[in-house]
Amino acid sequence: MSAAAPDASILLALAQTEVTTALSLPALHAALSNAPFVALPDTFNTRDLGLVPGSPIRPGLIYRSGGFLMGLSPKGKAALVEKLKVKTVVDLRSVREREKLPDAEVEGVEGVWIRPGEEDAVVALGDFVEGQGEKGYVGMYLDVLKVYQGGLRTVLERVRDGRGEEAVLFHCTAGRDRTGVMAGLLLSLAGASAETIALDYILSRVGTEPAREQLLAFALKGSMAENMDAPGIHNLCSLRVSCWEAFVKAAETEYGGFEGYVTGTLEFSEADVAKIKANLVLPN
Image (tube, rainbow, N blue to C red; front, top):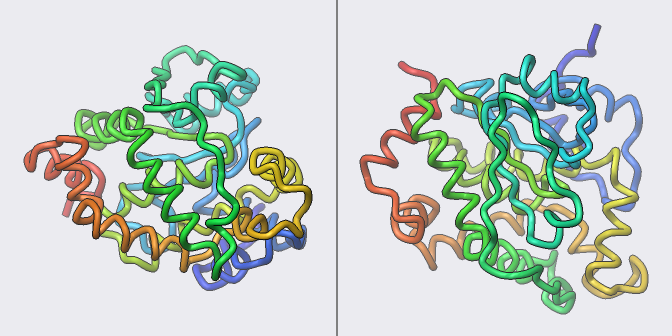
C-alpha cells in the first residue's frame, strides 16, 4: 500500500531542496509513489499532467517523462501500452542525442521525432551567474521554442486530433527543460494557474532525483565546467520558480504568451486552439 499522497505544499517544499543535497528516501518514496508521478519501468521523472495538484487537464491524457525510452524492457513497454494506454510518444531530443540512443519501438505506439532546427546548443555559463540564473534560463527556453517547433507542434496536433481520448507522452533526456516548456505550454492552454504550472515545472527536481548524480555529471560535461564551484553551474543545475517566471514574461514579450506562440509561430488557427483546449480538459 502506498503512502498518503503528498499535497501541493509538501511537494513544493521537497522540490525546493538544493540540487547538491540528496532528498531523504522516505520523502522521495512518498512523492514518487503517488500522483502526479507515474511508475513506468526503466524511466524516471514520469508524471501525469492531469494529476498535478490544481491541473485542469484530464488525467490519463498527457504524460511527460525523462529517462531513456530506448532502454524500455518488455515490462516497461507493457506498462506504456496497457497501464498508461499511450498511443504516441514524442521525442524532444537533439540530433546527437537521438542518433546516440534512439527510442525503442513499441508495438501499438507511434514514435515521433521531428529533426530540430539546429544542432546541440553550447551552454554559456556566464548567463547563469547573476541572480538565480534567470538570464540563462530565459535564453535557453526561448531557444526551445525556436529550435524544437516540430516536436512541440506534433504534441499539439495529437491533442487536437485525438478528441481527448488518445494518450500522448513526450520526453527529452532528463524530462526537465524541453519537456518542461512543452508541459507549461499545455497547462497554460488548459487554463491552469501560474502556481500550478510553476509547481509542475520544479517537480522535476524530485522526479530526477534517482538520476541526480548522473545528470549533474552530464551538466558539468556539457557546460565544460570543472566542478560544481564553477560560476553559474549551480544555477544551471537548479530549478527555481523565478527562472520559470522570467521565461513566461519573456515569452509574453516576444510572442504574446504561449497562445500567441501557438497561433503565430506554430500557425495553428483559432479553431485549432479551441479544439486543443476542449480536448485537454474534462467536459463540463
